[in-house]
Length: 478
Image 1 (spheres, rainbow, N blue to C red):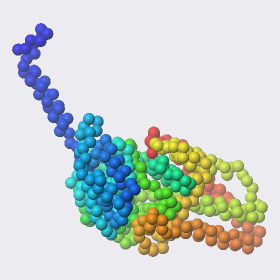
Image 2: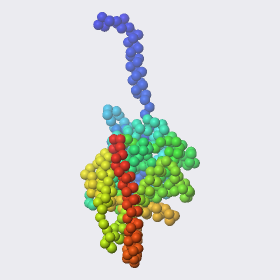
Image 3: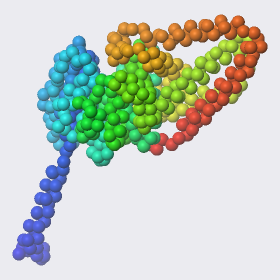
């Protein structure tokens, strides 16, 4: 027996206490840590690849392995990425973390980004999760940890996308800041829509998303594919998201993980990117078979896409009608101003302001873009051009490589983005000439019918904007 402070404790009790402490410490050490394999497809990313790798090495939870898959590149991407190749050991919060970076130059790759992703998948399919990162995307330091915590908390989740935005600090001038502000607002509105739909993400964007390897394997089996990503679609990430959802898994947007993607700083580049995205989405939405891509019009992940396209159609119709009716009314001195027409722009400003207010990293540029109305309205006309071009290309059934078109546009080549402007000018000119050939009675009849129709459509739009404005955002920040 052992004497201590006039109390006696048996040696057996002491041994039991020591054993319990030991078992508890072993239990803590034995907790399973899932393996994350990171794949970075990189095409001419010399300007950004170093920052991307530094962002990953600065994470509070490092991927266990990082593979940079360089494809079709003609710049110094390989040389710059290779500076980071090899093992990296970092102490984070007192704990040592290890990761290793590999750089693969697969040369000419006809499947482009899809081919690079599938090559990377073969290198990490032994891991639990695949983290896909674009070669121009940087993430907040806790992004990987947040994605891992969320996806490992529920085995029903097949993939989770980060909350995307664009860092607007490096841009100066007039056009680039304007386009970046528009893209930031566009991302914010899209992210909030997904957040309020139970955080169900329609598209697991390849910019910074984590995938459950088991879900990817199931997609391959159910769709008779040898790889997770296929080259059939212009939007490989959207198609994979549909397949993951169809396989019975959830596709989510993260509540915490944030990443800044590369924005388009020219009208030419933005047009090519948005037309490719819209064209690919239309292919997935449209009923029937087009090549190897089967339309899935009733897929739950495409409901938001249908709403977006319907919304863009209505926005285009109301704006064109307003311009034509205004010019026509002024031409014969029949325009009468009504204060009620100020209500739609006022609601639009308030809605834009709320979108800016919902941004996590908002700044003065976001509020200027929202509150002055003119930049947001001009950006809407730009988006209408993308919408028009995408549907025109789709309905024409003309076979074009939209990946190549985007790459060419980002190099500063091609003038296809001017097509909507030229067509609009030609059509407007013809309508003006036709208008002045009509009799006064016919002109008055057109105005008498046209303004009420426009008023009704605009009124319904305004009601929809109002309900969107007052909808609770549940504390989400995008």
